[in-house]
Length: 112
Length: 312
View (cartoon, each protein chain N blue to C red):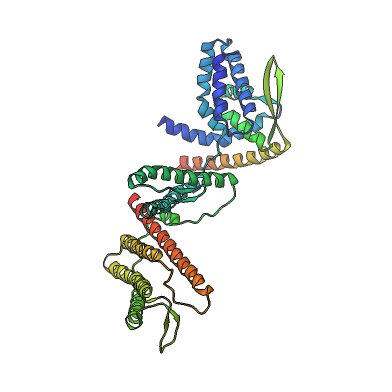
């Protein structure tokens, strides 16, 4: 049952994590920092999910990346591109619509 | 630098072989592990490294996350892989058996090679043939997947599989009547003139194409071929099975093989023009070869559909 749930959760999180990442990349940020930020806000995700996602976003020119050495460690920093910014706006409106539908359905269910 | 970490990254790198920018991927994973060790464990001893790597995941699974959407063979070709291999193997098998019976050697570089084999050698040869055919079909599908273009492959029964098993359509009365009429007409010609092959149609005295012995032989082959199809169609009214068609095709192949083995030299009647007998012999042989090829294809197709039915 837990494995089944994990499968559905991963599926549900896929698009959502994409949106969260795009929201966090106005300023340059690196993978570990992003994961920590998300965990601090109660949204844990695997490294293994985040890094391939960042790579896909970069391939689609939605984010750019650059290696930098900070605190004596090499880190790969990501930042949103104008294209990514545009997509983020559209995805946000999709998410708002989804949220409205969900709330409406839940409300109707509660009144039954 | 930790040896455990290096070995881990080396394995990830190996599994990433098909991913573009693998050096960058590995560098980023290394950077993340180092960051995590520093932030969460405050140490880089082997035990901490091992724990961190365990949390990060199995190297193969880590690599696979970067290869999402990368396919060696498109799942759309799954049905074709089995079907094409079976068909290719059918041809290969038929030719191999013929090479044993007729003791001939044949090579179509680089896909087919038939040495002169004994029966027991053929048994040992068959698994290799099958693997070679499966490999060839696999390679073709890998290349088609890599092309990433929409390629419409001949379905050869794949469509039927998708839409469920389709039974053999029932035989038609008008087919049987036409075949029977052809058989009667051929029989009449043979009984009346001793041949069904004519060089010129003259109602008074038609000129036969072959010398008397050859004439009788080829005519009987044609009559037997038509007779077989009449028998098969008639039997299908009682028991409509693909096995009947397989038996019909097998019988026809034997008859065509006999015809192909009959010496055409000296069989054709003397022509006024010297080049004509040679040309006629080539055309006649070509017709026999094409008929044998088409019959073999039809038989393999029926066998494939039979196997398909059994697999279901």
